[in-house]
Amino acid sequence: MKTLKDVFADYRAGLANLYDTNELEAITLLTISEISNLSKAKIKAFPEFQLSQEQVEKLANTLTQLKTGKPIQYILGKTEFYGLPFYVNPSVLIPRPETEELVEWVISSVGSSQSAVGSERLAMGSRQLAVGDILDIGTGSGCIAISLKKNLPQYNVTAIDISETALQTAKENAHLNNVDIEFIKADILNLTNHSLLTTHYSLIISNPPYVTLHDKTQMHTNVTEFEPHNALFVPKDDPLIFYKAIAVFAATNLVKNGLLFFEINESYGNEIVELLSNKGFKNIVLRKDMSGRDRMVKAVCS
Image (cartoon, rainbow, N blue to C red; front, side, top):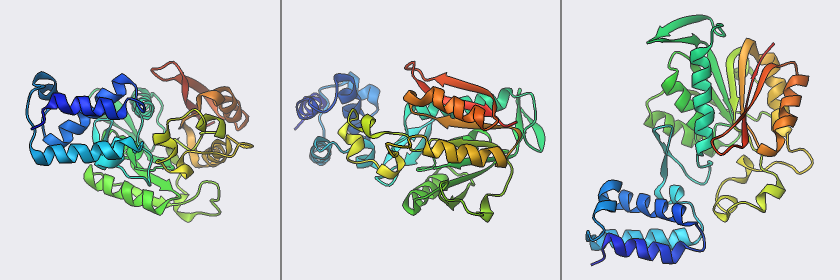
C-alpha cells in the first residue's frame, strides 16, 4: 500500500520537467487533499499515512493527466478565488492571484470613497458603501462579479461575456455562491444598441484579453494549450483593442465620478493610462501587483 510520502515521490518524478519545486509541491498537496479528504496539515505531518487502493488509483490517474500539462484546476473541476469556491473548465480562464488583488482594490476603493457614485449611501459597519450598478466585462467564470457581489451586496451586478459556455459556468458559480447576478451574452467589440446595457453604472471592471503573441512564446504550456484562447490573446497589430472599446463604452455609460478598473498586461501600463487620459478620464492610477509588476489601473469618469 502506498504512503503519502510515496505519492510525493511519484509526483516529483513525473512532473519535475513541467513545474518548479514549489509549484510541484503545492499541486501534489492540493491533489492529495482533494482525493483523500485529508487536511494539508495532516498530509505534511504524517508522511507514512497509508492510502486506500481507490485513492492510489485516483492519484495515479490525476498524475497521468497532469503530465500532459493539463492544469490541476481543470482536472479537479474547481478552484478557490477570494475565499470563495468556483467551478472551472476549459471554457473559462483559471482565476489568478493578481485578479484577487484587483478585486481587493475595488472593494477598498468603494469602501473608502467619500463621494457618492450611486443613488444613495448606506452604512455597513464602519464603512460607507455607495449603492449603484456594477458591470463586469468579459466575466468568464464570474469570479470578479461574484466576489464583488458577495462583498458589496448593496450593488446590482451585471456581467457580460461573448461565450455562452462561459456564461453557463458563471451562472453555476453564482448559484454555488448564492448571489444574484444578471448575466448577458454580449460582445464589447460589437455593442450596437444593446438595450440590456443602457444603465448608468457606478463602476465598470474588466480583465479583458491582453496576451500578445510574443507573450505566448514565454508562457507555460498548461496555459497556452488548455485555457480558452478567446479569453487570452489579442491581435499583434492592436494589443489594446479591448481597452479602447471598454474606455469608449465607460466614458458614456459611467455616472459622473464613476470608477473604471482594469487588469492589464504589464507591458502596456503607460499606453493604457494615456488612452484613458485621452478619453477624458481623471485621477488615473497605475498600480503594481505583489510581484512589483504594473498590472492594474483605476480611473474616474469626468
